[in-house]
Each structure stands twice: as structure tokens, then as C-alpha cells.
Amino acid sequence: MLKLSNRFAKPVSSWSAPRQYDHFVQSLAAVVLVTMSSATSVLAQSSDTISTTQDTAQLTTDLVSVYERAREFDAEFQAGQFDLESTRTLVPQARSALRPQLTLGAETGLATVEDDGEGPFAESAISLSLTQTLFDVNSSRELDQAQVSVRQAEAQYAAIGQTLILRVATAYFEVLRAQVNVEFSQSELEAIDRQREQAERRFDVGLVPVTDVRTAQAQFDLAVAQEIVASNELFTAREALLRISGIDVQNPTPLADDLPLTPPQPADIDAWVALALEQNLELVSANLADQSNQMQIGVEKAVRYPTINFVGSATSTATDRFGQLDTNFADFSVQFNLPLSTGGRINASVAQARADARASNQELLAQERTTVQQTRDAYRGVQASISQVRALQQALASTEASTEATEAGFRAGTRTSVEVLQALRDTFSAKSDFAGARYDYIINTLNLKAASGTLSEDDLYAINRFLAVPE
Image 1: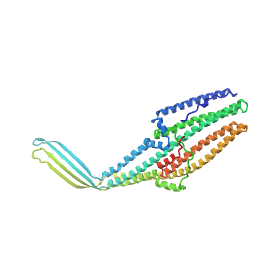
Image 2: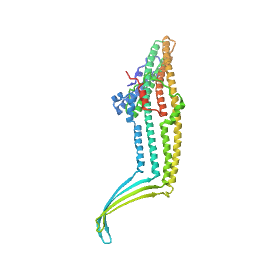
Image 3: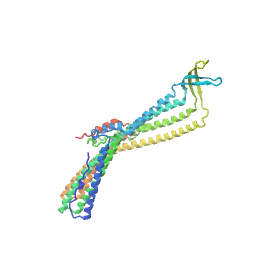
């Protein structure tokens, strides 16, 4: 658990600076203390409100464990499952219109004959009717459309699954990124604090001017503010992961140092675009939605066609009226129905279906263009991330060497404390950027696979194998 530092509360040595500046430093330290105390209180209160215990959070710190919890907890993923279940019922509903319809009816009551005043007498009847569709183009087309709708829902659900993988991975590595930034900001604060104390001691013996002390104090105050920002960003990142998975991951397993930087294969951006146009799940779903809307035109037109049904019924009646006999009656027929006029309803429905089909076709075109853009951006993002990681790795080595040389020069009297402070900030900035670039590489790789429709849980398991187990 990362803890916020209160080192900035240390008093400044007495040096002959103006009284107003000394008062300003004391006021700033007091304000920062209050801010840090409030932030720590908020973090503590939030930890008490999470739905799972801290022990559970400690056990589920790797990427795959968080993902498996998210599959059970995430509301968007669960809603996608229920939407798929709902859509799958469209097929049996549409098929039922083409299957036999059997109806049982019964009635009983009392009757009188007004002319002779006979009665009352009891009468009862029971009936059974059967209807079987022989020809109904509208119902047949609705069944075909329902099957396409189910395929669309399955593609959409698969897309939601891929999105969940991306959301979990992004949120997980954002927590790692924020955690690293807090660690580096705290290390930077400690280093600047040491440099500030050293500048004060050197000022006390007359080796450096007062400007060096003031500069060190200003850099220290800035580092304190940056640590507060980094801590708050960590809290925000943990909240985002908590919303998806339902667990507060306080110690996510970090990336190993030997993470391989594998470029996209094939190394051809056009090949990835072609694959995306064929397999991108959002595009597949949009294509099936367009097919369904095109089929709706045929469904509405089919209302004009005749329907032919076989209808059979059997009725049995019973009465206690004197002179009346019980009867049994059966009737079988073939019914032909043809709508001659519907007041313009069919024409209006067809026009509406055509407009909806045109709209869905444009949405398909927009999704196609979006898919191409996302694929190209993700491909270039992976390549850029690899180059950036390698460049930042070299930059980190250079800044560390530069910091060592600057500190040696400061001890020898050839460099100022301002130069040392800037070198320290450059080093910690390079460390933070290097760690973030590695996370960007992973996210960009997942984005490329999602855009091409090839992202699966196996990719998440492969990344999880490169998480370092804390010793």
C-alpha cells in the first residue's frame, strides 16, 4: 500500500531570507499538511466502503484474476448476456406462426324459452379448433429475419466480450501506471528533500548563495504538490477498476522487466485492414443489422400476399331441455385470405422500412470507415510504442548518467544546485515515461487485435504470464 509522505512538514533552517518569505513557506506547509490529511482520510473512508474484503483484494491482484471477477460483476457484460438471451427467443416466436395452433374452448349456462315459458334449462358446450398455416410469406420472412437478428446479437455479445477485455486491461494498467507515478514522485520528493537540506547546510557555511536555497525549497514544494496529484490519480484509477471488477486492487502485480516487444505480424498495415474488414465484430454486427433492415422491406411487402390456412374444429353440446338432443359437430376447411385495402397502411410501412434500410446502410458505411481508422491507428500505435519504449530506455540511461555527473560536479563546485535539481527531475520523469510506454505498448497491441476481430481471452492470459511475481 503506497503511503503519502509528510516529510514536507520539516522546518526550514534559519537563513537570512526576508521574513515574508519565511511566513509564506510556513503557510504553504500548513496548507499542504491539511490537503494531505484530507486526501488520506478520503482514501481510508473509500477503503471501508468497498464491497469485498481487503484479504480478497490481496489475493486477486493479477490481470486474469481481475478479469474473471469482472465477467461476473460488470453490469455492461451481464446486460449483454441478457440481451442475447432475449434476442434468441425471436426465432421460436417467429417459428410458432408456422406451426399448428390448437385451441380448447368450453362454456356452460342457463337458458329459457320466452314463448312458452319453458326453462330454465342448462346448456354446455366444449370445442376444439386447429389451425395450420399452409402458405404465409410474411411469417416465413419474419422467421428468416429473426435468425439474422440472433446472429447479430451473437456478434454484438462477442464484441462486448472483447470490449470487457480491453476495459479490464486498460483499467489494470492505469492502476499500475498511477502506482508507479506515486512511487517515482515519492522518490523524487526524497531526493529533492536531501538536496534541499544539503543546500541549506552549504548556505550556512557560506558556500552557496541564498538563491540556491530558495530554488531548492521551491522545487521541494512543487514535488509535494505533484505527489498529491499522483496519489489522487492512483485513487481514481483504483476506483475505475473497482467499478468494473468489484474489487479494490491495491497491489496489482507489475510487469516483468523482460516483457518482449513484438511488432505486429504480418508487418503490413493493409493486411491488418483487410482482416478487420472481414472479422471486426462491430462491423459484423453492423452488417447483420443492415441485412435485417433490408429484410424488413420484404416482410412489410409480404403483408399484401394471400394467406392459406387449414382450419378444423369439433364441437360437442349438451342440454337438459326436454326434446333436445346432445349434438356433436366437426368442420374442416381451407381458408384463403387476401387483403384488398388497408387504408394505405402497407404502403406506409414499406416506405418506413426502406428509410430504415437506407439509414442502416449509412451506419454500416460509417462503421466500415471507423474500423479502417481504428485498425490503422492501432497498428501505428504498436509500432510507435515499441520505438518509444526503446528510445525512453536509452533516455533513462542517459539521464541517470547525467544526474550522476551533475551531482559529482556539484560536489566539486563546478555545478550549481539548480542543475542538480533539474537533473533529478529529468531522471524521474524518464522513469515514469518509460514505465508508461510499456503499458501503452500492451494496450495498443490489444486494440489492434480487437480492431481486427482476433482478440480473445488467450491474449490476456499471455500478458498475465509476463507479470512479475513480487518477492
